[in-house]
Length: 564
Ligand code: GLC
Image (cartoon, rainbow, N blue to C red; front, side, top):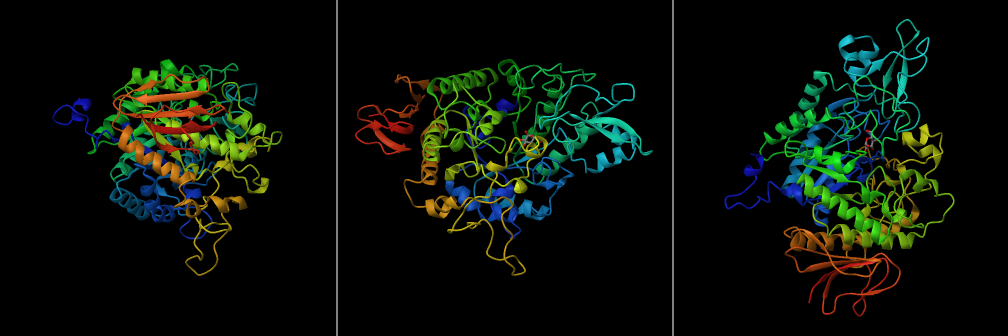
């Protein structure tokens, strides 16, 4: 039914309703994007003031990380009120103005919904701790094991290290039950076998849809429902093995209800899932059935080595999944949870792929070659922009920013840093406030003055001095800049590749990926090796990540060529 609705008279997909199949979506970590009021933390006012920059860049939609009221233990993924903005970010009126202004510029707005857990400061959890039985039944409280309940109810580990359980203290001051938290202790998991939880989250979606929001990124979409009885994981790694805490069949009921709600709006609202499944090939398409979520991120590019064969395998696997599910691939080179690509590519490359942990563990022992990393990151952009499907960009990648590795310990905010006892620096290095203009920090991130005339506070994380050369202002108008490369890629993508069809690999040397898209004369050539390769004779280079001289594509570079 929905599919029929989406066809225009004449049987063609309606591009306005099907925008989510080919869009470029820009991810905004609000606190790191632009600060409107001078408190050193980005906010909605800052984002509104920079919407024209995003429209110029050529994005179709903006995804805003959680902006809800929050103690910010996990950068806002710990929500106390899903219907209010955190006052540090703005007001509901600001949010509504943002949606209106983005729409006026032709951009959609996606929010981030966090349905797996609330903050421990949420009214529900506080009531639960105070002994309200109905509130307790919305979370996963269990008695401990051992004679006096001193052992956690099962052996699950939190994604942020340590046990996934924290013991409560009863009103009598004695140790009481434990509660489950797959992330930090300040993020208690909700119990999705409780109908009240479903109704509340549906109402939250409705609240924002009614305000014109175009859709949601679903945080931890595979985590909501746990295996009945919460059995031990027996050492299973949640990423590679079927773990009873994740990816349970019951979760699909949730998404069927969400989809029905989204489809009831005009235009229909959309979802993108953050879903990790151990058996991805079999399990991921289930989330993407026509009556469930529209898209799910392709996470393999976040960790794949800068090597032709593994990259090609990643693309093939993702396209095969898309074939099964009918949902477009949602490509993503980086996000707020991983090390930036210009840094991942700046050190020796893994045989196939790394992980966040292996990547960050080598910071102290292997010097990065930042120039090489950026060169490769630019070539990677040339590659992903040519792939069929949706493309997610992460704030600052269009400026060629590297991960900031040297944030002082006392400025780090990520629970991963704290819970690892400081052994893992965590994710702050990808969330440093953007450099907009000028030669010294805060590089235009904050205004010159606060509303009361006083100077702005320092940015919430320190910006490296070398970013002076990378401000949006410094790159604007420089045809060789990364910003110019991204603008050109997005404009050409819209013109030549959005209307194009499936992907076909072209013959190319071992270290090179060359592809074309059905119905388009554009070829994408990316050289992941060090030696130059010849581009097709007679072709016209439309865009390149490094200078192409005499038809030769240098190492670690990519180009789009109009076949001659
Ligand atoms: C998701 C978010 C991550 C957050 C976690 C807990 O994985 O992307 O940033 O820490 O969920 O909400």
